[in-house]
Amino acid sequence: MKSLHIKNARAVLPTGVTALVSILIKNGKIAKIGEVAEKCDKEIDACGGYLLPGFIDIHVHGGGGADFMDGTSKAFETAIKSHLEHGTTTIVPTALTATKEELIGFINAYHEFKATSEYSDLAAGLHLEGPYFSSANAKSKGAQKGNLIRDIDFDEIDELLNLANGDIIRWDAAPEIENSNLFAKRMVENNITCAVAHTDATAEQATKAFENGFSHVTHFYNAVSAHRKREQKVYAGVVEATYINDDVTIELIGDGCHIAKEDFLLAMKIKGCENISVITDAMRIAGTNMTSGKLGSVKSGSNVIVDDGVAKLPDLTSFAGSIATMDRCLRVLCKDFGFGMTDAAVMLSLAPAKLLSIDSVKGSIEIGKDADLVITDEDLSVKTVLVNGDEKYVRN
Image (cartoon, rainbow, N blue to C red; front, side, top):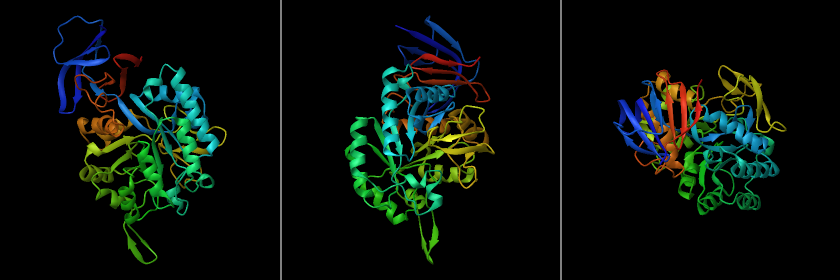
């Protein structure tokens, strides 16, 4: 039986942060939290650093110089390996609004990656962000390509679902567009999380969408409607509808640029951290020193620059994803926003695990769960990343 002893760690548990403690891992599972007397095959000294559950990023477009829309197995591996080095042990590769041919290439590349890469276990399924969005409002479009946004096409949906063969686990759409209710029902029938995104919907439209099967809101506050006056009449938006629907979960970009601290605090107060997944929404520049690149494929993606720590369209009209990694999100939450480590770990790991229905085996440091773990130093910089008890990254 393969065994590992991690000692001198401040473990971030669901109940709080421990004093220095030992963790015993056997056959890739957490076997004991406390004193470890037996001799193990390997020992890791955390040197007083923090031990956290591996981060779970449910919305990410790329990293390490690659974008999942590049449509190759190599691009998948490059991006996933890059995020692994920053503590992400489970990832959901995300497509953006694109042609049907590009979406087919995205799905086929994922299948090749899953069949051939040593990092295949890190990918939990696919997320399609679009292409069925609202083009009526430029702000709700964000960095999505307006000429590729289109009406809901059930023939296209069926073709992509058949090709994916169960690997699409989430699909986003705008609830105010025609046939969105039928779209939501189709997603529910296929056990796919249906999320509201890039929308100018009113609260009434959003509430109806939640009743029809939409259950999550993509990058909450960003490209999502809120209270406003339209043609001399006041309307609430998706933000308000989400807040008054307790069963709807949200995700927040944790780079410290997309969302103000006060908005983050408000979301925590109303929804609770157990219903909030922190995401990177990272694009290919994440995890690199690049100052410009493409959002989407190298061939047909949008040009993006880095400005003041965030990815933007060159004309500065919109953010364009982020350059964040999940360890940066951890530092933003705990150092910049002042949140506790336990709440941060819930939003970075346990809440997204619940959304993916894998919280019985991942998302927190508990006996019997997978030993997907991150060791950081006191400054919350990643030192070691373990997946199923195996060291996948060690900082030199």
